[in-house]
Length: 416
Image (tube, rainbow, N blue to C red; front, side, top):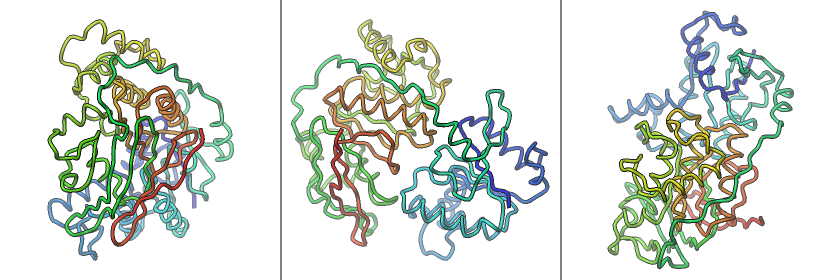
């Protein structure tokens, strides 16, 4: 059975390849796949089943379960989709980055299942991270600069990817102004327990984040990481009625959500989708100073000067007048992190900042984050399922799932 790992660095070429295979076109190098039944396991396909679940209250993926598909963790949803597709007995299965955003336990379970069925059909695994390549796949497809498909031995591909890249980031610009009256303790959760429809999510969480600390938050899918973030940064009603203190004030004691957000910089890859206007790179960075989605007013000379400093830090000074939405994914993310950080907020939340990126791009994000941590007084709350190479948090807070809701503990301290 011929299995192929497809490197997704050239997203457009990979998308075109998948589209041609699904249309049963003759694709060079894939002649033996033509006129055969192929199915796709991807986030887009899964979202269609989730929409069905929303409309009808159930899904064929979990028909035997007395639960909505939406209540399952990311790993459980993807496993359910895999089992559904296997029952249809495809000749080949396209796996589109199946392990992205999954916890280590879910990844191990998923890989084990694929190893069990590897003799039943051909696998085309689209991947971005080297560590995600399935162990039984020996052939890697990459697209060269001319966008021509090139098949390589896995060992040769890995060796070629060891080429060093420039991940350097210049000195972080100083803040335009200092925040006043910020207490030493920024976030404090005291015996916080959370339930959703009588289902326990968090169980007696005790966690303190102080000025300038760099924390990594980890835990399995469904363990409550998103719940904690939304209680701190968003308007999750579960934050009211529990002992959650933000910037010295108990949540719900008078400060509005917007008052809190002014003290927090936030980045998640999903934020990129909010920016639909044709703002320039310079305007995008400046918008972080006025807390707007894009820029709707003429910036001052001082704002322009600060944005220029940040663009120089990133090495993007030549891109100031380019349209933000026309940039590659990595550059968009680096700019949005700069946008979140331009005011030097007391707290910077980074929610899965490197998801969907290849190894070298993730390393550039990691170096930028380390630089911010080392050269500012901003506390960082970093959320990820992966152990990113080169990341240097001071502390790690782990959520551990249990029947009574996730419990938390500090599991390690890192020496920079």
